[in-house]
Image (tube, one colour):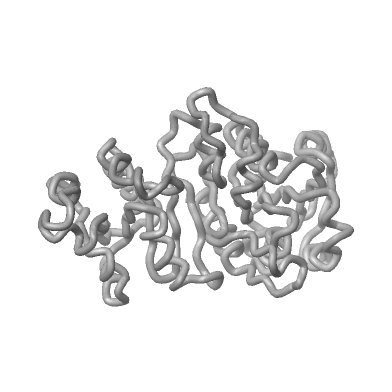
Length: 329
């Protein structure tokens, strides 16, 4: 019974954010063709949410046959033991009392153990992720965001944040570190590893266009007049990689169709233009370097509109579709 399913975990993020709302709306909008691919969704949410947000459960229940369990193990045991013919639109609803960041840890470990196939994550605040107990003896840092959690769970993996959008795609060479540490991280093989990750993404996207990498300094260093990182670090770029592009002109509209991926050297260098162009209308986040597929929304928890039924589910919908596409390839 279990073998016919692609078992996809969906963690809904902060319980007082828009994660559950956009999950419910996105799942209700999935085409029937996806249900027929035998994708079985495991929704991780807090036990209190059915009472707090009944309107979104009604949305789910119009499109899916929902069965609720109080643990992932309980759901997996049920699926392994049942002799009943289960409907194509089955959805596993996990009503949990653990914290939102714990769901990510549990789902990621289940993916590595092959109990689950892949992971889609809803928006999780840094405040919540920082509460996770230290998961690795190799770092003293608190895990900031999903990527921070994954880095502590899998300390030997080289992980990079990528964002897939309607207009262009980006990979971040560094992410949640202070600007003062960016150059040192890049010189410590950070750029080389990021370019390898970008090439892996290029393969996943089946794109033959070149990869572009941005400079760090204004005017990409102006030939060494404004810093020398570009002259030393970009002296020998791999075949199919061009750069450094001048950062303030890299994302002009005329450049979007020229490159498969823009490699950005720090967090805001990539995410400001990406979010300005894609907003919540499109775009999905992908973690490169994990042993399983993990996609996510490209926006935050938006606690100011919690339970107001105005949240846009498109990024979650894109994240789910991308996840299914990647595990099927």
